[in-house]
Length: 151
Length: 84
Image (cartoon, rainbow over all chains, first blue to last red; front, side, top):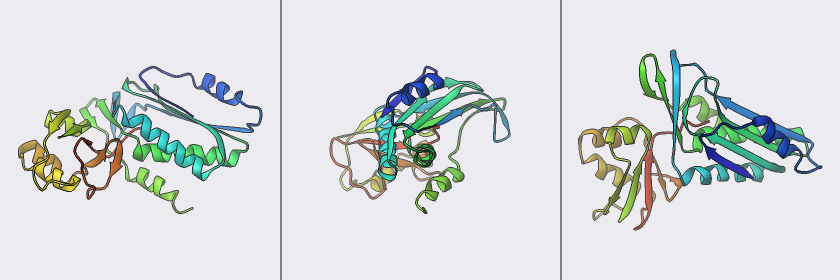
């Protein structure tokens, strides 16, 4: 399990290769990259600043991976989440999951993102042409997370 | 004595990121602490008695508002998270 919270950019390809080659019984690696868009809620986004709760962030991400492990038989998981000031097309988050088969890898990857969106202590502030504003949590994120309890 | 941390919109409006606080008599849980902070008036009342959701964590775990606070705890207040 790898968890990193950092300002620096990450190399998704290099991280995928590292995980992919770490053991020979891996049949599947699922990956998700979240990146900054240049528009949100009708306004042009010039930049976005990510605040976090040092001390709780790593613990929360660890907990999310543990929850995924309890549900699916996955081999390994990685979360890299950036903080600080980012611009359009900058990468924000990388989630990788390895397993024997695609079923558990895909599911765990989606699960981890849905939980991260509702549980990980990060907060985004956008700098737009209309001024600065805090991004509001979305009802769709809560719904996505709740969906996992229906299964 | 407890440590209270404020994040994001709360930190900005209250102009406080961290404070050491002595829990007054009768303030035993998160609900009561929110009410106590709201009683400071102004931005505090807006944040803690207003319509916007304020989540709480104790010692790095999110908790419900009826959770008891113990001496030495680190309590954090923040808006719903928006990472990812």
